[in-house]
Image (cartoon, rainbow, N blue to C red):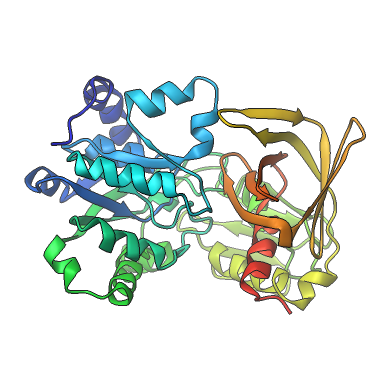
Length: 390
């Protein structure tokens, strides 16, 4: 039986209750978890930084969450992650045999394990997707799975946003699949089913349940996601203030309303929402046109190298410049690092405009200034990996 650690038993009725109340989050169907005999898996879409905290605060049973390995390397966090909340380390973006073994052992001990198959939070409220390896793992573990939808969480605070908004969110138990149910499905059938159930779309949710998310800085931070102007095609010329985003090169201007709908005031290209704009720029940057774009230098604020149990800081003052087949980092101290996309094994964004990647098997973390976009590097890399670029 999965038992709650002392820290969780103390935190849930205090901080946990405050967290749900403060963010106006309700839970629907979570009581079913207390009637389901462990071990089992809990899986959901991933939108908000606090997703695991929200779910655990609303859960009648303890859930051991799979969390990014970088958290375990941060000073002071390792004891909290390992002993106090019993999280399971996962190196994002890579196949991790250690993580699989740890999850398997936790399930054998009768624990409940929670994970977000997408592996990273959605930037625009639309599904990120995941590969078939998740379905294969579920088949191997042979335990029930609880499937959740975190509804409205994008509106509460989009990944790119600098400030939270006032609105409501719902943690909804959509479905529980027994081990017998899973046994009847092939890997392909299970993958299709998980993709459908966990592929929560904020756009579709807003169509069915129009909800407002109030704030006076609704657009601030959008330049982390929207890095390409649709009119002049200049990169990193977008700037946000209050509810407005503008291009400093051609004066393209749009505002974002409380329903997360875009209203274009100056410019030729019209997008209904942020997701539509993002889909357009992603198509451009991952095509032949992306090679022809001029990428200005980004100002970096943190450059780290991964070691066995910690992250060593190499520089806090540097520039980062993307080219067609990679990017170059130049420190204030005069050092130059070349990172070719073909030599990068995995690349994923975690907290605070920070990218984490393995280059020739060595782990690095790079953070750029708040008003830049690290996303363009990752989307260019991912397209090259998938062979989508021309």
